[in-house]
Length: 450
Picture (tube, rainbow, N blue to C red):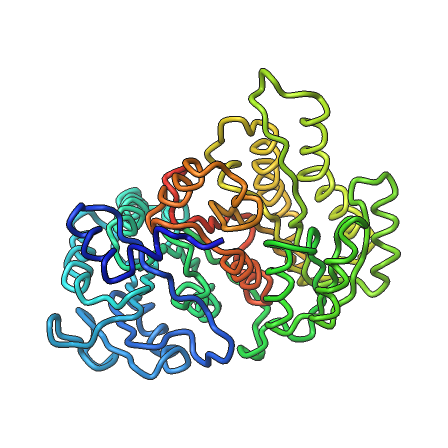
């Protein structure tokens, strides 16, 4: 569905009127396009501590325009504020900031470059997880990065985003995958997020097809976000299996034909659903995406047992039961990636959605609980929590609520199904086993929740 306000705000007349009235002026976000060769099309600026050296070594694979600022001048071509090129991507290694006095380096590095960012620029701060540091002052300084990064993300303009990546000792080898996602248009609707990167033995072999040789199952795949996920996984080289209810057979078959995929009609809440699914997957899978979900919204005072039970059954119980069956049977391979589609409602809550929010919060809890148990098999499990996404469902939301949902984010607009799909595809990569037990919000840094 078209966002008419963005269309107007970016027209010649709209730009003048919006500016004169002081109204929000969201830009059209740059998103990944077919045929694009490099994650960054523009200048990459690198600065900070020792990890900046590792980023510099990776940089030629990300872009052909690399600069350094406030760091070793031999790292790359020095960038001069006011004279250097506009910046498309920025990486600052803050992992060596271990005392309050050193935090001033954040202001000294970022302040001069904020007026030199291109539209839809992507910024990334690297740190060390506070709980891994024995010295209290050091842990305090690294925890301060979260407040700084989330606040600065809300100050950025013209579609720019910023994330904080806590990199564990030994996880530096997995930086490339994170950089390729967070510094590219694939993360267009992700901002203000804090992600932890852990050591992982698996590596992507071919960045042009990072999911080549892997078999993926997507539930709720017939339309909307599920279809976008299936398309993106197939684009990245995965062999895709599409699952949805038998009533969605026509849409499912059409998508399967277009992607060269296989369609599976199955009610995931049926008593024999686990047995049916195992029968359909004799060779097992490498990527499992639990996207299927429903809403039955009512305030709790008016919530019927049927509405409550239906939402919990589809959104939470089915993913639990089916994943357990796949694990117990060995159909979920070692080194597999499991992605659960949660929601910011499961983080912040939402009026009239006690059943839905409970189910989505339960998925986040499932990822957190299962992650350490699956680590020995190098199986990662994460939740992706979308915010307001432009779908057929949100198109039916009353106008005032729809507009509020779009504007209540740092990016001032709703996301697209592609934005959720890109996050899922990244978490499905072999190297993304470095991320597990976490919830990645795809919400444009919505004001709802953290």
